[in-house]
Amino acid sequence: MPGSRKSPFNPQKLLRWESFLVILILLEAAVFGAINPRFLRPSVLFGSFNDFTSICVISIFVTFVLITGGMDIQSGSIVGLSSIVLGLIWASFGLNIWLAAVLTIVTGAACGAFSGFLVAFTGVPAMVVTLGCSFLYSGFAKTIMKLARIETHKGISGFPASFTAFTGWTICGVPFQFVIFLFLALTAHLLLHRTKYGRYVFLCGINRNAAEYSGINSRFVIMSAYIMSGLGASLAGIILTSYLGTAKPDFGKELTLPIITAVVLGGTSILGGRGTILGTALAAIVIGLMRFGLSMSGVSTQYLDIPVGFLLIISVGLRALAGNRIVIKKFFDGVFPAVGRSK
Image (cartoon, rainbow, N blue to C red; front, side, top):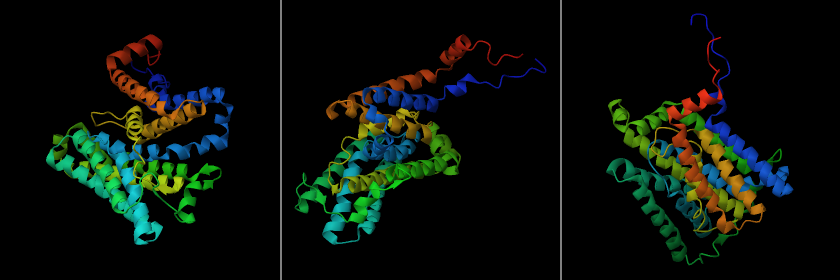
């Protein structure tokens, strides 16, 4: 009607997926805090981020891969390989530990580039490529250890204090690892949501042929997404090695399920073309706090993947339901029948 106004209140904004994830974090704090009051201590709560920073860091960059319509289940293997490469370059070749860290990042990028090339230029399904590469990189890490005559279960230790100390720093009580995560999340957010490159990533996931017709080099965009994923995995490997003070080839072997769950739970479509860095970051925190809270509640670590798998299944179902406009319309017509009507 002429002169009518819409209500400034829009209930759909309250049900954004990110809002739901924030509610999940608050519920976790309430539930685990009730079970074990120590969970709510600031020092314990902030300290818990040290245990799952790897999930947070890697999932941010795997988001790019899934948005392009791909899949990445090799990140955990790159973490272990990066840890070993870092240790061997420092211990066997005597290079400065920070120079070794730079070369480790290059190694992670090279692993991502190899996988990305196969996916983008050969047409082999991403699931097959990254599954094969996960075994390949894991095998490389163990082979390198054997050639260097280092026992796998012992790993490489004795890193310089300057290297092992930086993951123990705090800024106003906030762990430095969490600060790194926030910086990477902000950088990835700006890259994905505020640049042309980010738009290309989304378009490749929505319709690769349309992207090609628009003059976008879809092969380069897809390959670059895997390179960033490899970079994220190598960074996680460096952080994990510094935090634990040792380098081992099996670092990251249990990270695949939490990483994929964080990306999907964060709202990224497994079919590509949709996702946010904010959603992934919040979902990674949800999963990390859940695993930490369950551990503090006395649950054995061997059972921690059960709730993560449950979250993965539920998140896929809920996102599919949320994408059904007919269901959403009926929900709002029933719950908020007067909202949005003209006065």
